[in-house]
Image (cartoon, rainbow, N blue to C red; front, side):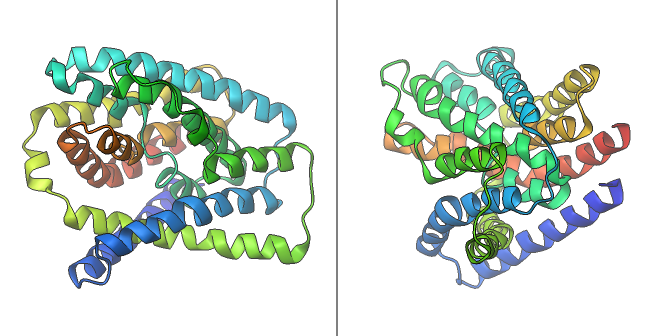
Length: 307
């Protein structure tokens, strides 16, 4: 995909987000509606989009490339986990916020934002790497993520690893690896369901931005320092590493995009359940989501020119 294609696709996403802001401002998408649509997107549409991408027949990668994707995904998250411990110290974050910055560094929005954006701007074969990253995300969050948030007091929640998104992602890899063919009517149903993902997720994103306290977030110097490191320097590091390793273009672009996405919602939900102060995560999600619309466009345009 050319830089112009990326710019055009990100412009579409910006317009969809703006529609979401408008609908929220008009009272069409209140908090209850957003919560209900979020469940539909995460448990139905997003998983369907993953599987539809595999069933489309556009992906020409082989089984060996899936294994490579798993290996690169492990390297990707090893870097982020290490950075999760280092970054709060670099920023001299207060003791009570260190674990929050830790999980914000590792667990970004690779699913809710990453999957539809990847579908919009990346080549078909790159989706394999996006799927693998999301499988590893679930495996890691409900083990490492929960342990960090609880201050090493909670045990990994193995049951929650089997979320619809994770199950569908693993199923998609199995279908791809063994070249399983589904009946046409079933493939079409999955495709129609998955096609709703981009619109619905961007509408929800716009609503979340409208309801957030952006002014307060923009005043937090620690969050701005986090943005520079996590949304700009880390994607450049990831791109440089895999580019120098001479990985194929699809892998480099997919993993770079996954490094560009903003703070995810799952740490916020889990922190609320644990009774933790969620103000930092809430501000982090709001500010990084807005800024990422521009950093993703700029960085992915540069990366695509360099590949």
